[in-house]
Amino acid sequence: MTDTANRLEIWYRANARDLPWRAPPGAPVPADADWPYRVWLSEIMLQQTTVATVKAYFARFTARWPSVAALAAADDAEVMQAWAGLGYYARARNLLACARALVASHGGRFPSDETMLRALPGIGDYTAAAIAAFAFGHRAIIIDGNVERVITRRAGIDTPLPAARAAIRAELERLTPAAAGDFAQGLMDLAGRICTPRAPRCDNCPIAVGCRAAASGDPTRWPVKPIKKPRPLRHGFAWWIEADGAVLTVTRPPKGLLGGMVALPSGDWSAAPDPAPPLPGDWIDLGAVSHGFTHFELLLRVRALRLAARPPLAGNWLNVDEMASAGLPTLFRKAVSLAMAHESGSEDQ
Image 1 (cartoon, one colour):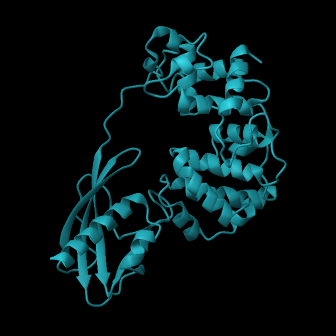
Image 2 (cartoon, rainbow, N blue to C red):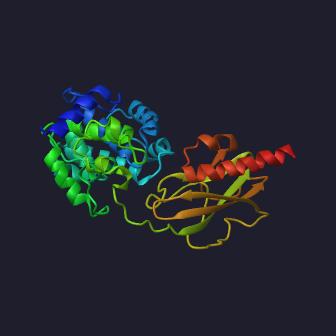
Image 3 (tube, helix red, strand yellow):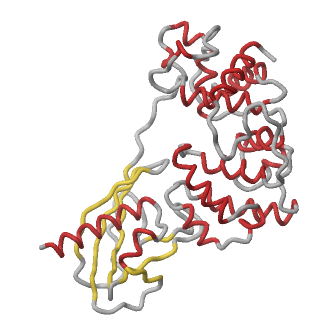
């Protein structure tokens, strides 16, 4: 073990966060047959999401679906509803696809080999390495955005991301010990608490000796990132159709953005559409909500129509007071909040 890895692991054992998907530092991998399931579930949830947010979702998921087999047998709509609010909904669809592939081809158990793991739906290089190390105790090179930050700073890698990843992997190959789990978890905790994106605490870093970024006096120079291109703005419409104390909801197509999620009826999201509403009537423009997706920003205008009787439209009618807990994705929760605020304001007048 290198001196850097040794100092990091000593720090990690004294400062590790207590998380329900982690074995205690220095402890062997739990013998529980469902431990790899917990590791995998946490890693999928943690993509693009904070630990603080994931904790509650992880607890609810594992209570409701405690094993791969239980998740594989779950109703798609129930899983999508339970996922609502975590974002990046393709993860939830891949979660189901992966669980079902494991039941169909692996007896409901995760393989320990990284190549076999990468063949499963929704599992890429990072997640395969994390499962191999955290669930099975194998040596694996685990690289996420936090690890990239620590390693580019320590080694002073001036190549912009993503081109820098080859150099990052080479440095990690040199540093990673045979028991890779605590080392990788230590890097992640170090990134979250010491080697932060802004105002890193180099004076408190256990591996500051030999760190080129710390020695430079300007550690935030790393990692070097390419200039971000502005995300294009798209426009869309959502329709709040209310009748007899209920609102029409639909389930979005299984593929595409927010696939399989419960939503308000809406048109296509393009440069500047103005589609016809689902039915004629005295529509009221309630304003707009904005939401950022990975590759574009969306400005969604919300229009409302309140009727005495429910029209013959495809979808599911939910009571108005159920809308806030209906498991809608964040974009449509914003639209619902706008519509309900307008309704409340109308009642107050």
